Length: 256
Image (cartoon, rainbow, N blue to C red):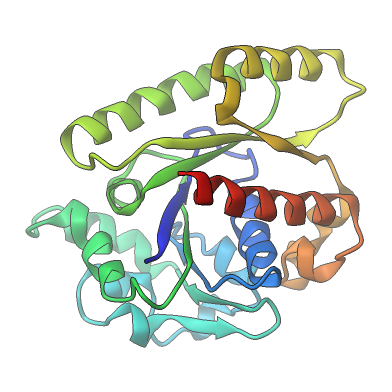
């Protein structure tokens, strides 16, 4: 049975896509069967996984509109070692087209149920807004991984996200919970980041992952080569941190 996780944060630019592709690559490297689902019409997670979004014959758009199955639309990224259910600009139209269809918020959940035995982990890269696409991700997932920078405004955005997750849990998906908060782009030399990190640990306790992802140039460079940092430069500090995070995820899931 696969474990399905959304990587979500309503604040933009916090490293959701970087977290998704590097966690997927890290899990693949330690022997897990992984499907990465790109729910963002920009298709950055698709491109960052070594898959050209412009050449996709089938995408997550077709899956949401039930004109293709996950098995038909997912492609294996051989460089990265995991499967990709990609996105391109077609997905922007799905918002409008889903408005009037039945079970619109459960389309992804039903599609993923068909491949439940094929993967150990399904990671969903969500867009930064609370849209019908994000709602499909949250309705599909067992839990949410929240990447966040240790900055003041990130704390405000976190409050909004927690409230959204509570609403989805109450009304649409009883399984949904916050799996953990991942501190990303962390620079221990900045006093404010240390203070926010301490606040997070004091308030959320064991919901804060032990692994911390440092600010790292090689992680930032990797997308321009169409690869996760874990594949692009496995020896970089950021890549090593994501490998440690992948191991921590597996351990945490075993305890759930």
